[in-house]
Length: 351
Image (cartoon, rainbow, N blue to C red; front, side, top):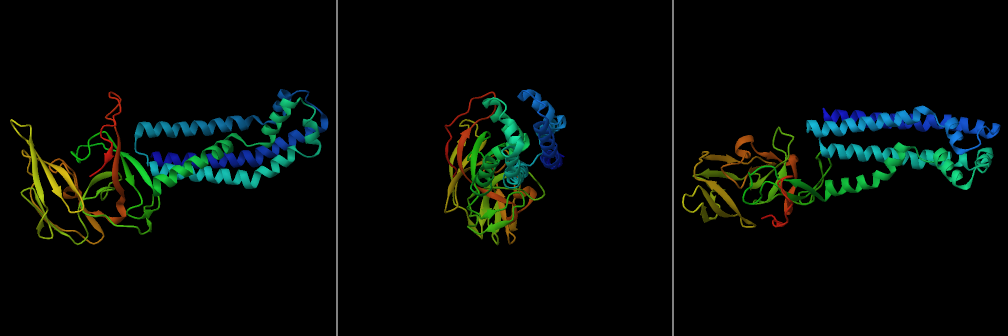
């Protein structure tokens, strides 16, 4: 619903601006030309009242209200797609900014700077002349906002889509590597460049490796998940008595500690995939069963480091390559919520 509201508000905004720029501008020019010929206004305030159509102001307020409705829907419903919103906002701002700059700007500026309109404006004091030229020959509010925000939105879109994207860890499935409240950075380049929203790969760069911490969409789910890659396409995986075998070989692991010391319930184990070693947790109170599987071509098998408390490929299946978002590589802040202050004690590389 939130995405539909976004698309509706964007379409209305574009249509209202075009109506203002075409019909409203024509009305302004006609009224201004008549005032210049009749010399009807003696001050800038009176001229504005005679020239500016009232519907320009309320139509702009309508657009502002619709955007407020969208923001409220995002906060209340919480099912919006940020990537889609960023693409739509950037496209909308770019279209309006481009049309205003290359189609409408020159004509409206020429109108107030030539002929009897230009002469008429010189009858007013210097400060009012500049103000009137900006109002009658300058950008309308929607175009002004679009041209201001477009460069910022474009930079954010490029960085977020093709370079790096921030995420926040919502669950304990990756403990001890990642904790609830960790804010992480995800490399969007390592696994190939993908189009925002569509997710289609447009440039091959690299492929996931065993041990990588990866952000992705699980099959049939639109939410971001983060787990560790334990199986590559074609791998045969066996998980027996909480020990992982890849292609018949036991993944090296070492018991580091059992906590709490007096009545241990959690085993802290160091697991080594060759290219990376990391810590995992086993809960001695939980046994989720064994499995044997072969990873399909173009798919990856994902598991959480909190092995007995993780919803992963054991639950919802293998992750297709097109669902990959990127590789998580660093923690840049830890913040559990408003009741606590942000902390930077956990800043560093993700293992």
